[in-house]
Length: 286
Image: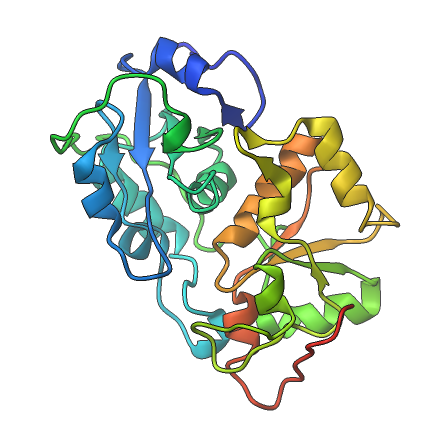
């Protein structure tokens, strides 16, 4: 196994740190640019990316299939995910850096999935706009990995909740539900894609953008203060939600950086919750 080239245990890496190691054979850099507004991430990749970076299509590599309650971007089955990764060169023992151009809010989905499979993975803090090194425009194609990541049949239940779990855990354990979407979507003032505007009853607004400044993530102690302002009882479970379980992973990344850690990903998120008109929707502050 290759020696570990990452200098810290934090799940993020700075541009300066990546600049020192991106060219090493031990490091795989993955470009996860994707946009809710319909723009194509591959177009951004081809207009300029970190040298050697491999483009990862979030829709095909990270997203599986399922019924409406699993939301717009259900998790791909772990074994299928590992197979898709092997096709782009990611295997057991890989050391991965992933990035986007939205402060890690998209790359965090890939980070979470890789982390659950015990892959050594980091997110570029600040995203592509923070990169201070050279840029290339030629597509990078990696040979398939001959040593795929070992993956279980299902994602671990101790880190993931389904639509049917959310109300039960919230009622029985007093779980906090954090909604990573923009506040106007949480309040139902704007909804560009889901069936009905609003949020899950009892969910608290915690936009992922509150965790960053112009350079990237806030320092760990500031993140802890932000979370502690909402999580008055740290013993209660934390469920992270968004529109379709993408930026919810950014909240989980923030929890890890802050040192609080833990947290469940709500796979269906608001798109899964709102898919059934029988489920209640709230537009008031919780």
